[in-house]
Image (tube, rainbow, N blue to C red; front, side, top):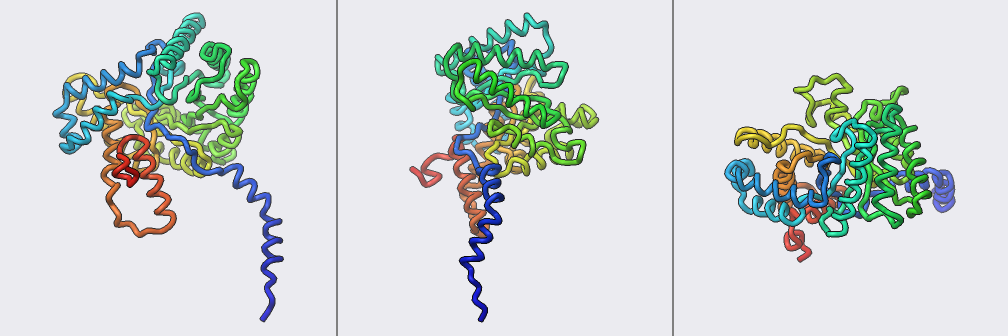
Length: 382
């Protein structure tokens, strides 16, 4: 029998694959250990105040109380689920907050936006000091496209300077880079935040950002490649998430307004590319928003809640565990859909066990526990 000399062969393959092994470890470090928020709540900068989070929770509870019969019907009569939602709204109504200086704020004279920056930074400092800020928070500033570049950088730099006021960056702070159209813009963003860290005396690497995927150029570059994957790598470890932008992306593709939605086939294609690009990188995924809001009379509230419940559930089933919320009335359905998703599946064991399934189940249980859907006793930890 031929002597295989496996030891020698293994050594040769180790040498051949050393570069590939190093690249794999660098580009795909695996999941982040931190708790991912279930949503990001966007608040226009001129409407943000130190008590915004508590006020959103109170408004959500008021709406739930006013239309409790409708809500109970929509969640299948599950009173325990409603009680859990109420508790979450009273205790921690917002997971992640973004003070919006972009589309939600609009284009204003420089002096007006400068004043809004100062007021919002002061309000966020007060919320952090008083313990009313959520676990994570930040701003969305105007894009690095040429027409808005100067204004966006001015807002970003001024806000961070006022927020830190000579001290460190608060834990949980992240900024959102919108309307990205090239890898060069991500390179430029890294250059900008390194400059700010240096000038403001912040810890190196502390200024991190999300990439908002709301242009076709993020998904498909002029050479036919999926640029969003290259954008993650260009961020040099600073990219915390990829956020899908429902309405800008749809509009860029020419989708008519009434048909712009999270469940449009074009949206599903973009999000599938995002999902593949982010897999194994530690970069979180977030679905976008729906502008069908639970407002007006009972019929309007029902329509908004029905739409939001369906879309949140759909996102969760497709592996998007975070989304955008634009209105306090969307908080009850965000938590109802999220809690139900985890609670309905915790006892199901009809799937054949194998290593990949075991890993997915462990991740599922961790997410359910982290968001408050599952108790320690239910996960075998109590």
